[in-house]
Image (tube, rainbow, N blue to C red; front, top):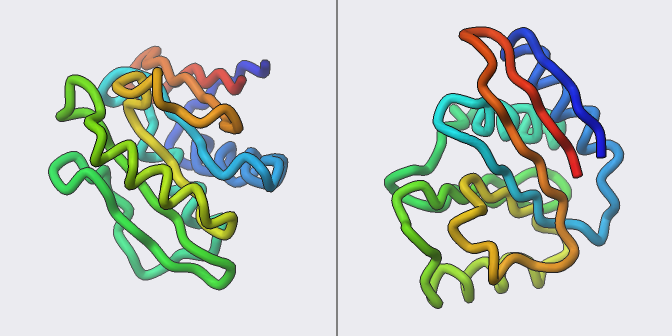
Length: 140
């Protein structure tokens, strides 16, 4: 476990880039936990930048649930479960399908909505809002 504090969006993006460099290949699922405004989507922006995904505005897919981005080595699937009380079977099956492709990285915001169905091989990151600029980020 590592705990880091960031003082800006730029620092959170940089942390995401560094994190991705250390992520084992077999862990193609990153689960993000934290309240609204705690830095989850900013972290996903950093992952997208690290993958070379450019020309997109990385936004939380709160209303569409899933956004898919293609990069040179595969895909980034950005999932936001905020609107759901719990993930249904359809969402769970779709996530399983994405995860079956080892060239696809799946990032799930509000992963606590499906804790019973999360893959064993995953990274977990918790975000905590400290103040307008500061965030506490814990990587498990």
